[in-house]
Length: 525
Image (tube, rainbow, N blue to C red):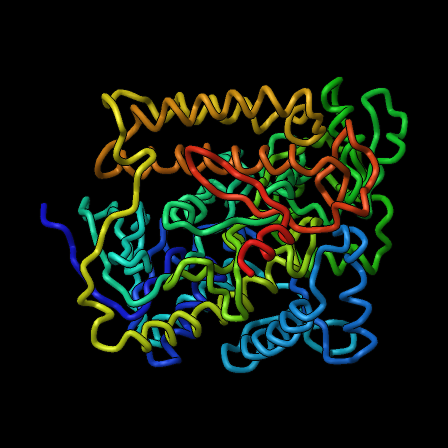
């Protein structure tokens, strides 16, 4: 079958909040936009499956100051006040736009005012799809991207992928590309996260982009046992118990290490007994999907104990991702922009999880800025934007260096054995990380020579390659941070080291490198 060949000013990879905000604002800026989603835009991804809080803070100086200060210590003082202020401003404007222009049905509080600090995911993304279509964006549903295209100078010039329903390859030559493909949860089965396999980070690295904060990637969400719903914020109201009924001291929604240790020995139970009546009502209004599993099981989570587990959420809730280098979310590669969970969120979260409200605010803001930036860049190319000769950049998992014969399912299972267990990725120790990384390096070497395919198989093999690359950046960075900062906790380095108050950049494919941010800056200057 012939390849579907399209041109656009801006190509957006992804279909969640960041991707739709990017596509919307690129189109509003006058760009011809194509958006390609791995699933059906408006229904796939972590937000569409449930809902999210939003870092929505009215422009009251004291409230804004408190909002920015609240996570700075948790994040190891790696956040940037200027970026946090920008995100608060942009989020306030975007949420108000949703309320007024899109008539989003926010719940109403006792005082009759709308509660705009949370979004019901399915309704949010349904309206974003409608806004995007109304703006003239062409949407390719069920069309995962498999690689980027670049011109001979190395500037990104489009993308290629596979349309699942049409069983057809496609190629979009574009002036600029926005990667908004989400983070990587390693197919852990966290709700809505199985489309998040780190594809965008692999594409970016193949184009020569850097990543940042990949050591802040060991997020594990609390979920009722047997379910996939990870809404950890509500567990701030919880008491945790061992199997014998004794209270698990030190465990909380923020402090999950005691939970992980106990789960290695047996079951852990929980009860949301610290929520008062007003909080309980607010929780049901804000996140009704959280209670569906309890209602089906006939459990009152405020009064009854229920077993819990921890599910890996990787860089979906962690803060690592593609490094951005300017206010419009450009990367180190010309023509390439990043937004949402695919991009690092260290700028507003430092080293602490961006789960929930901060990630939602970041998706709106970075998507808006990346869309506008990509449109401007494409416009600057003039008539040559679509006529450039292009080179396909995909390598690992697509074009093996040796005899084809690898099985992506075996590769994924091997990666999961190194990144999902609590005693490897959550309770980190150098003596455990080092052999795990060696195993991942070996997996990478083998997949580079033997894993590949075409059509639907290429989507699977590229996902496997992306997860392997993600895991290696993650562990290499974790080993380089020889201290405990933010969510990057080391059992063998339990204290925070003032000399390491800097971000870590990483990148590379066959050879992974890690550098402190200040070294990179010095090298550039």
